[in-house]
Image (cartoon, rainbow, N blue to C red; front, side):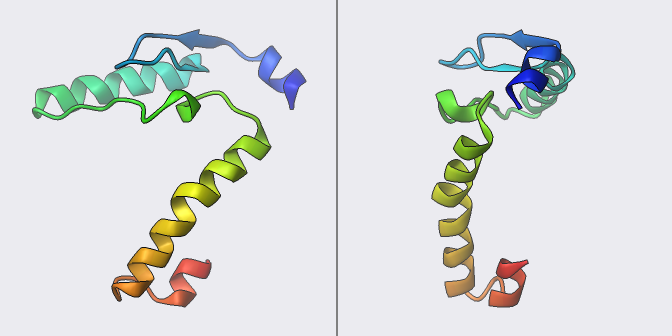
Length: 87
């Protein structure tokens, strides 16, 4: 995984209070999305320093800390079924 990350083109940019590093194409797409959001009076910024480059294990940890609680919330509100959340 490290070899792959070292082999791709990367770009960093100041976005909000952070300097995320992304694949060059991903950074270009993010900047386009930021511009489109600004045109609609909206703002896109990273939530934290872990919003970009991370290891697989860091991604799993982030998922478990944010997505799993959100699924539990929406199941409890009846907006998702448990079967949908388990997919």
